[in-house]
Image (cartoon, rainbow, N blue to C red):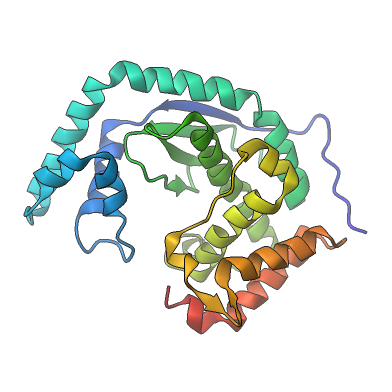
Length: 268
């Protein structure tokens, strides 16, 4: 039976929330809204929260003008909601502090790996953009300003899971190239499948997030073998939870499945 002990004196990083900077917000809006930059078009998620932005960008094809309009809109929105943004930072920080150490212990024990001591701070930016990318090299991510407090916590759990997950991945698959950890590579796709699977089916983590995450909409209609993609890996993970296998064993089995159905997954 595999057993990983979390020391009482183990190092944990600290999550610090703050308002997302203007330049970061503008780049993110531009990246998700300018036509043709990304394979998956998520601009409607932004426009559902910022319908006025959609009107301002309608028919604009020049990249510089598009960017400048994004900047102007974000600046006006942030200036108009300055107090609300700062209060949101304070509220989510207070709420997160109550579960932070518990979650870090759960994740470390489950992934069977210590937190790296060179990552002392995880920056969490409260963003006016309702899409939440993470940056593995800097250990930063965003949570949506307009999201509920519990949704902010769920996003925090999800993005932090990625950070320690990839530390474990590098340990199990040391030959992996850094580029594989980002879109559109299969290693990245597997991580985005497993993050909600783990959050939804791990009983200790579910006590913190308190609601299920469906995962990316792009995954929902995909089938591998005779099962839907998310169901396939959820079943694999639940089987792991009932076994005495290490998390390393689970990762290897999950990657074997990715390689088996590579032709399907590459089309997503």
